[in-house]
Length: 507
Image 1: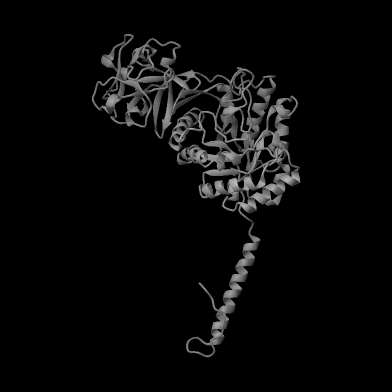
Image 2: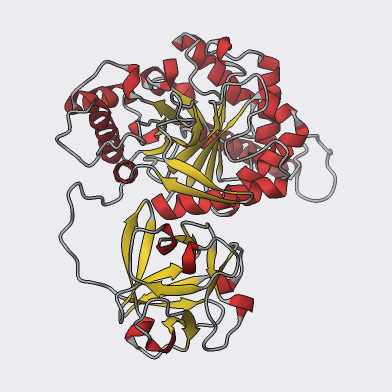
């Protein structure tokens, strides 16, 4: 509503004195409201960050690059649709094996300035946010030789303008102005970060992560700077930053560096070897990495901190391994049918413990056996051993559920996120015949062994799941989406069809 303060003499209508009184009252109210608003502090970032259960998806060779960033599993020739399909395949595995709901992705000026690749790379961002994941977009300096400083401020601001204008309104996207600003003094970095906030106003402060000083490893100065009261904070902590410590010393040191802002902190990088067989469930271990990771997880849990483990994929290859031995997953599959396998289950469990999950250090007491009926989504019919056969090689089909033991199955942990599916009536395992990797290979029952053709991953799709054979990466499928009794189950490339989606109900 517009107000005119100009006099109109003694024209008809309300008297000039009444109008003047009304205008004075409006001015008074507006002034009072302005004064009250000035007393109300800016909204602070959410207390506690345990909702961030994440992984870093990185370039194989690390994210410091003088060119575009292409994270492991993607190719710069990939289209948007291909990137999105690959990303969804990987997110399926991350979500199902560890309950991941956040991915931290790298950007640099070259990546965003390369319009063709940026438009494709956005498929990884959009695939995540569309499924409800949070995405942290973090800037890596454009080449390791730049020594922890922004190499070109104009290009950096231009990049961030593009990114924040694109995703500023997406509540699932978070912005990290710089990864590890170790080339700046504390005062310099805080000024750079404060200028970023005032420049990129389309980025909501509550969805901005300001890194700590040094290698993002000390939050105390950032925490105490009122310019960042409304932001989240990014924290890094690795064992190799420091000399060996006891478990208690690690815990104390981590807590000290968090300052008074642990409730706003996200551990955006922490990690330890996952390929060397370390037992992260051993509370009495004298291994420095085990003590470190257990301490890190405990501090996160104590403070309800979220975190993004470094890395899920990518990173600096270790020696002649060809991969970063900190990486949580081994990448498999091909094309858009990518697969992930956990390298160290005790390590994965320790990360989940840090996120607040219930994880036991010791072997749990034996639990009563649980059997399930397994139903195809499209037909509602149950996985069934044909003709109640107990022999090796008996085929497995779908059939109307009758409460029979040959329609009931037990899930036995095969490790690394895979399961053996055991028939109640015969004690034999669901098996891809002949360990075939061909499309159309039949599902049978066979004496349980160690073969990967008897190991299946449950890949979540809402309240349903796919059953992916470990040896082939293909899915258990009801051919032609038939709803008839007696149709033999086969393996085919995984897709979105309801005839590859299953549910299970305890019986």
